[in-house]
Image 1: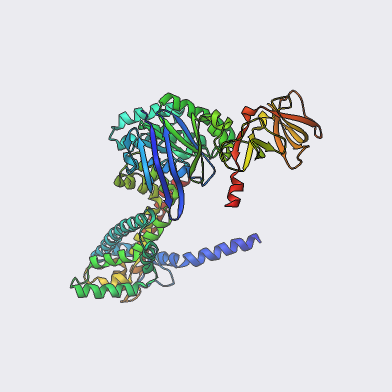
Image 2: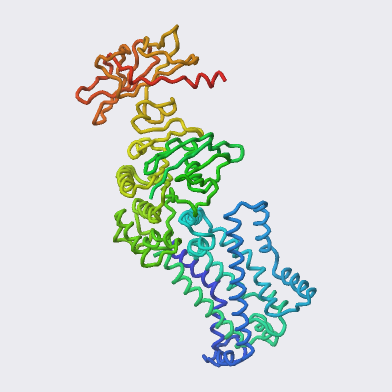
Length: 256
Length: 354
């Protein structure tokens, strides 16, 4: 029985990590095509990527869009959650539904809709437009995560703070946000990861300045290359670092 | 600081449900008042109205001669100690206690010094840098008390503060609460459904039921001479003997109690006697003999159930001195002094008729 358990574990992890492992492996291959047989290893492709100004610019754009759109989505999500959780509003069930509903709409539809709206308004497409698009898709998620973690415990602490003389602003900044910090940070990093990875909306809503996924896509059009593997590996390394840091600083501390 | 409280003509409704009906209550400055009643009696609603978390549908709330009916919690001279303590988990104990002072604009050094003072008052002087999750339930409760007292409120409101503690800790915290209240002199209003707790700490007990005040007064008065059948029952075990008017006398199945018939047109009455007032030694009124059904030793007394020999449907609970053990099956003559009989109109009969 024990053997079967270990076997199952091995198969599951292979299934999850084999694509990533092969990506990283062939990014080190000394040859143009990321296909077997393996030759090398070499760091040539990494050098190539890091000296490619267009790719580096796309990386910067992606970072900018990811961080700023997640900040906005988190702020709006928090305010909506706070309002709906703490105040009795007419039609609050309906409003909650309306806030979460965009989660069920495909990114393609959201992107198309925004494209039409921006064109009608004469704003055109840009990194701004892509950022707004990412706020649209991440707001429901941030709202749902933060709203779900607003329990009676925070509410009682907020009552206590008000009772001790705190005004609404200080209740939010000194009690609500610190108490909800794990949920808010989780929402922020999840939104950031999703925005960082997002292709469809960024593709539809950017033109001259593009995000990293769009840049990679245009590289892929000229065929598979070990260079794309190197970019992929770098992006993966970045995500893994963020996740590990989160695990250590945020969730590790809470458990202790 | 301390202040008196005066509540006049208070009504409160939640939708169609009337939570409080015509409450009039005066509490003196520096008094320890306990609002006592079963769950759903409106005692917590009344406390919330005092704290400013609810605005009453109708009526007036005065704290220290000022009308506070519409004033927000933050602007009231009251603080509340919440049932679940509601400490701020992300702050040290010192910051928790100093929070109210921070809201009043006190500088960090000054407010930490004051917080230390109040932590010392509740015996947690050396734990100022701990977080709430490192404490036991009783310690958290002390921090909540220190935090509520640190801003020097005129009135401290305590919402079932001892409900989450085990019995032994609860009894020792009662003494401590009372001692701290004496030391700071603040008016305390404490909500509980535990009658023993109320007796242990209150200067004044307010017995509530179904949104109304049934009785209020000093604990011994409310226990010995309750104003209503509900209060009599809620304050502790009591024997109820049905009574009725017979010409100009009061009659029961056990004879005529030597008390004047009440000046009221109610037909059915209940004569109530506390278990410790029933005696097997001769007193003014004899209840005839009763057979001991069971008995249990409680240290300070034997608690017995007895069945009346004259009216077998009547059972009594009596406390007998520990010097002599009543035997099961033994027949004892029971007596009571008339000043220990409380007489109430039998509301159950009235309700059934209405």
